[in-house]
Image 1 (cartoon, rainbow, N blue to C red):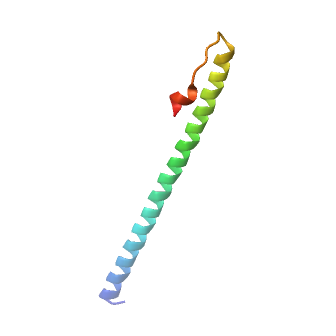
Image 2: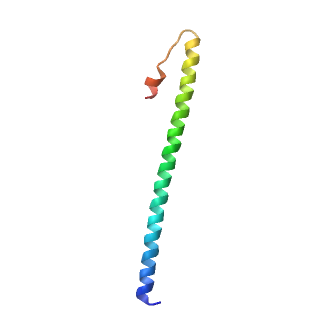
Image 3: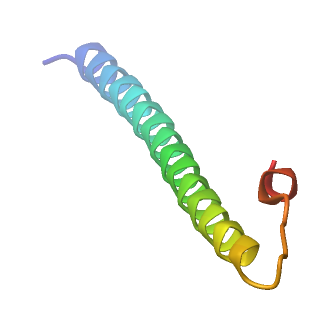
Length: 69
């Protein structure tokens, strides 16, 4: 393999690594976003349950959706 071929191979490897790193970074961001959305849904469901419970005790009623949204 000539020096030029080696340089081209190294350049191609670097480019492939960059593309793979970019893909992994994008996947990480999407995974984190989905985890955040899932957690927000869980918290809203918990807040809805608390609001439901509060409505039955002492006549309190909270607009949980307004507090969350």
